[in-house]
View 1 (cartoon, rainbow, N blue to C red):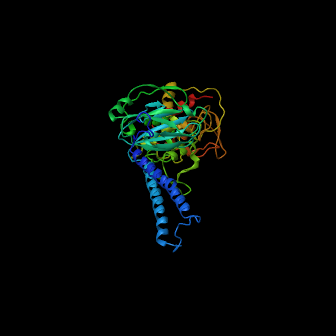
View 2 (view 1 turned 30 degrees about the horizontal axis):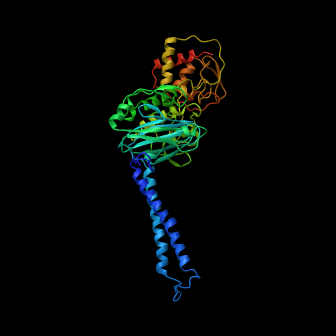
View 3 (view 1 turned 30 degrees about the vertical axis):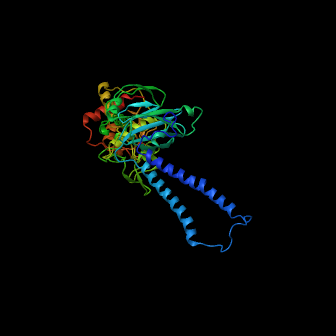
Length: 463
């Protein structure tokens, strides 16, 4: 029977418990569906009125003890199975505090996994034995279902949100991985394998380079350094930090809490009060929603000024941002669980008082200073609000210098160097028409050299 097993191997801590409950249900089903009907049939024939040999004297029409027995025993059995299943379900759905977190993306027709150190794999999942592993999963297209029979775990994978499951493998080996939800014409081909390794073998595998197909269809390397280190040092979190900086999020979500968006330090897993009075847990789905639809849940004390990044970030990039935010939490393990409340995902460090102006000839500028100013502009996160396409919460800066700008009070000013410097040092002094006073005041936080560099960079943007 080893070559034709009736059941998959028991390869996780859940497997034995799930099988025990399953066999209990099978036994009860055989009892009530297989034995009792024959007992009832026997009594029907034995005591049918055509059977004259049966003694019908002293018939008993009621027996309280018997009635309580045949009602009480099934009730106890059914309630026992109910509580057994309920406790097992809660156990399976409640991961330990310390887990190895792996991000999984389902797409037609492939499973794509990324480990905290950045290592990627397709239609395979390598995990260490004797260590809890939590999968944070989302779909890139339709509903899928991640199913590992040998581990007795299965979880639907949905587009637009995160679901998760956890397990702890108990023995090395290779096990089947299936999609258990019909997801299209090649659903049957969406299969893979789970490879359970000793911790030493797993760590060696983590640093083995290889080529994978990324979720966007491109090819990428999967080489990475060892991963079982604090989350802040994991490449996935580091990539998320770089993305966080490039998008300009660092300017609004300042760690000292002085930004126009809430600080993300310690956010993951915390209880956050919203502007409507509701209290939510800052888990993965909260963070995802806050990135893609920041107006859905506004943190108390902040304004709805963060731009939406829907359709601007890939599933990979969202996972990386979440990994970074989780690494900022004291309990972060390289996975996501909080939510950027709803401030502004970017800061403004250009001319907040600038708006929509025309432009004349390209101004003269110091190229060396402009290059330095561009770096300051990027590091401060200004690029997130002052987007070149005009879709940011701050005005675009192309063609701003020396143009005529209309302010919120109706006056018109020339965007010269003095205006730019004042907009950087004291942004609320002159607010461009059509914009809100959301840019932080940089006052004395920037040196004169840095301000000069920023001004030269804005001048270099020309028309």
